[in-house]
Image (spheres, rainbow, N blue to C red):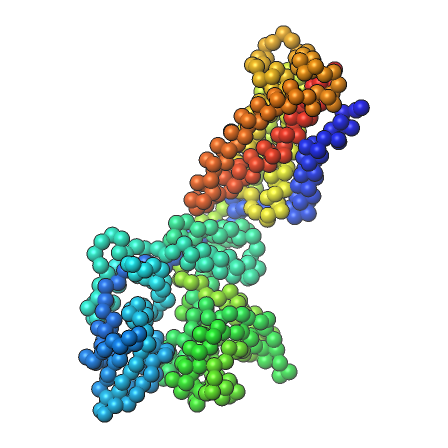
Length: 560
């Protein structure tokens, strides 16, 4: 039986061949995507605005300050605020107390506010900072403040109500929760890709920074694009040029594609959450927009820049007087310009808001020529590594029947790794290519272990031995008590030797993979690709390539 027939009957060799074929198909179908350092382009470093802080403040004092009164009483789950004289009906809503109820008294007004102490503090901070504030921890209560704030500025804001940030290093920290950073990354990544910038790498560093690689983009273009996605907000005009906050982008649940009507007017239909619809209705009623829409425009802001402004339609104004409306439509204009504006507004609505604002704190550029040069240099480095490995293998064994299978296995492993990279649509960069070279080196070490076990049962095999590889392989077959090639690869002695080799290999592979895990999760940017490709290479090599090589080398060396 020929060598090819023997190999085609071995399931480990067949599995290896299938992986290799699939990898080559993936590379041919999807191609390889190159990162910034191999293709050229620009990178940006973004700092997320925000902090986490404890707040020492009395909710009653806050309400006294907000309503300009000394009469505040806590009753159950509500606060009762008694204000001398009459109170503007829109005042509670403008302060964030959307469910407040007002009742006239003799020469006074009673305002009932169903709210917890933490809600009072959150509303005060949101009003004073014009930013979103959330509770991220209880006992002690820690507030996530999603804007650029310092301990000193927060103390200054709390001073009028007798509050402050408690002393201690753990009571105020610059940065945000991992969940907020991840949400910001996801929205930013989605917005950039929706704007037509595909294959952008967006990475997180700690809980303060995001790194963005824009391959093929110059710095000016990158800054312009990244500067556009910001914090989305809907506000309603109260009087003259004043406006009040109504919703943030997270209240937008779904967005339909832009559509035009028979008159050529374009609009973007979108749906609010139940809470968002209720807040929108209350704001429209309290400000008088339902009765006089033209005097109370609804304005959408992106990073505090208006992207849409229009009054309520008569139909919507009439509906909101009776009940909340979750389904809304923002009409932007007619013709081609209206169509383009509708598409832009859809992006802002559909992806929601960036949870926080960002500052561009660093940028840089890699020219396309330099990226091409790096690519060529890495290919040359890989070829040199393979040639060096081939020379060392030949020096050790002096037998091309071993050198060629080893080199073929190493090249096949590289192809399989690149196939996985192509299928996942990940970008190749200098770090990941360095990881490939490292996998080649560690892989050959393991192939040497397998070869030595096959030849001598694990004993040392110095290159200066007078016996040839063929003689030592024949002796190995004789010790196994078998003369045929197909029998050698299934004998207990042969399998025992492979078991000893794989015990060593699995230990080394596990150690390498565990050593790479910290680099994979610690957020060191480019090192993530380095760690990931090593882990993938070690896994594929150990589970697919090494077992196949053990069988292949056994078949080859047992033939005289």
